[in-house]
Image (cartoon, rainbow, N blue to C red):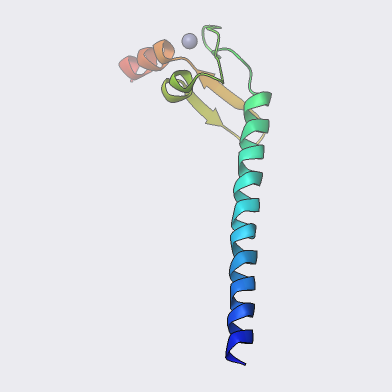
Amino acid sequence: MGSVTRKIGRKQELAEREQVRRVARESIRQMEAALSRLSRKCSSCDAPFDPQDPVSLDRWHISVTHDSTVLTCPECKDRESVVQ
Ligand SMILES: [Zn+2]
């Protein structure tokens, strides 16, 4: 029975790994869907935002609320932090 138990354990392990992969894929899909719904410009100054550009993704401030996304370009972000 030892080998059978091991087989079941391996099956479970594979199933769990597949589940993790599915969840990861789903969250990537949701992230892409969220990005595709984004307005492609700064909410303050209309500067264009490129969601394909990792530098933009890194520098822009993206604020996600339950029904909308607010994008702030690096310049406006700097301006805001100066005011505060
Ligand atoms: Zn701006």
